[in-house]
Length: 402
Image 1 (cartoon, rainbow, N blue to C red):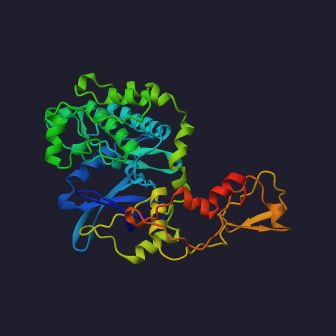
Image 2: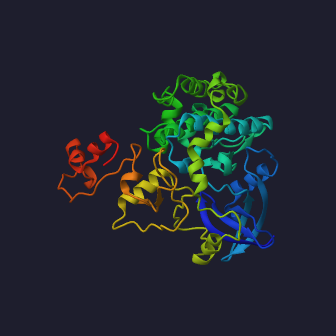
Image 3: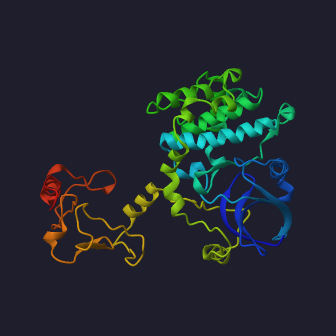
């Protein structure tokens, strides 16, 4: 298969993931590459992934070996998931979304365990997000079959490892369930399940021998807390299985539609190409060749709301908005005549008179000469009720118009 390497979209400790397009199809896939001499984990992943078929597991597309810059490269082709990983979204998801994604991951684990496979590295960065808010389990470089688990060295991400795995005792199905619990905490808080422990060696010791479990966020519902308690029992024989957890009330409390409330925004505005006909794909090829080794610049697949707000806060000068685009939303009071006023590019234009256009459902602020005020931490202006009152904002809110 002839293919073209695009821009980097991810990088792990032993491999780099790039976009890839073929010369015979308009489809885009992901290619995970490593030097052939250092591709043991990648070849293991290829062997396992090629034997799996589940809507909750990233789809295997094939593999090949190429020579690039005098190096032999092992390339694993997989389904491209355009919205990155769960970790890319920064955490702090709403409970309906957490339940929505957790249920899909558990279905993937139930399938893996039915095939006598253990993933061994369940965490947010190994859960890929696709169209329609679907998520799939990826990265099987550390996966192992149950009958070989005693022979294969224990491995994983310390913050997400189960106590028995951290102690070097065993790594069976329950370790994946522990990983689910840690991932739910990651989705809820945006932080590591052990935020106070930073050093990997200290983390392993703490997880294995402290006798503690990750702190369950107090803001979660009782159903969510109970779900986590079932996942994070230190005794692996007391943890619920993936099949049992799928019947937990926390997952049944929310309908599948509830998961649309969080990542739907990113789905509609993703930069990611869907085929090699998209200009962005070719721009990425022309700008730079994909480095397999060396410095890596993280490319976030999804620009979250917080990222966009931060970008606005840090920019200088007037915004360069395109008023001609079709993405502006017309806003007016519910009682307005459709023909009496219209909104173009965020400015209200009245077709007759301004007094006919406004009603009590519209709140605006007047522009006054700038008034000196103090700055708090980070040079952000500290505003008080008096400031808003002088600006006319509170007066406008009270009357329904300014």
